[in-house]
Image (cartoon, rainbow, N blue to C red; front, side):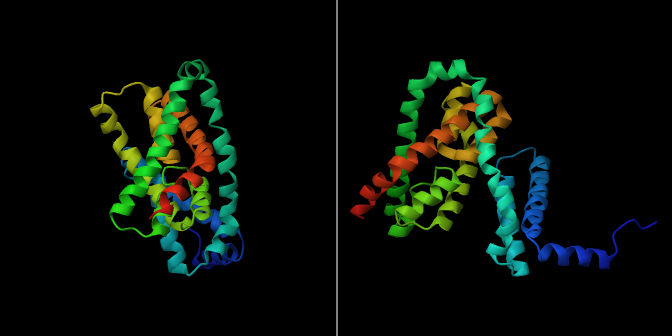
Amino acid sequence: MNTGLPLAALSDVWVYLSASPLLGLTATLVVYQLAFTAYQRSGFHPAVNPVALSVAMLGLLLWATQTPYATYFEGAQFVHFLLGPATVALAVPLFEQLDKLRQWWWPMLGALVVGTVSATVTAIGVGWALGATRATLASLAPKSVTTPVAMGIAERIGGLPSLTAVLVVSTGIIGAVCARPLFDAMRIQDPVVRGFALGTAAHGIGTARAFQVSPTMGAFAGLAMGLAALFSAVVLPPLAAFLLRGL
């Protein structure tokens, strides 16, 4: 017996979704589930990142259906809203590591400043050496900051927020892929150090990868991601403006 929905019913569902904000929400959830399934089947290999796959598939879907981004975002904004509570929820595993946080507080602050500043300086320096335009350099500057903050910084210093978003995701994927062999080569085994370094350099994607390794590593990666965003929002705009002034 055929238990599938008739084509007419599927057509009615599509007409309903396409005329309501639920289209963006439904597309986001379905595409992410497909991407996460691929991520699981790859053995959670960081190169098969569900965020990057979802972005690519959603972009292709919007292009194929000629759907304006504004129409899509009417529904996707519900997922976007949950980014705030999800980020705040990172405080829960961090609270469980409060004793270690007190022990490592000053070294972590130093690592945060050095890691954030060096990420900006090297990004601008390498881009300038390769002949990038000023707008591209400004877009590169906040590449190691979590996406919403990075886009705001890029817009403020004359960059392209859309380009910055791509660079941020790329940075996170590269960090998640390269972190483990790099830490092993440097003989860095402490999960606190690994997590904080990964969160500083590879923001949310690195933090998600850190939680897959251990709760301790994930907690300190989340702390680094949040502190790096706060520090960058204050320090990075004047620092980038100073570096870009003579270019």
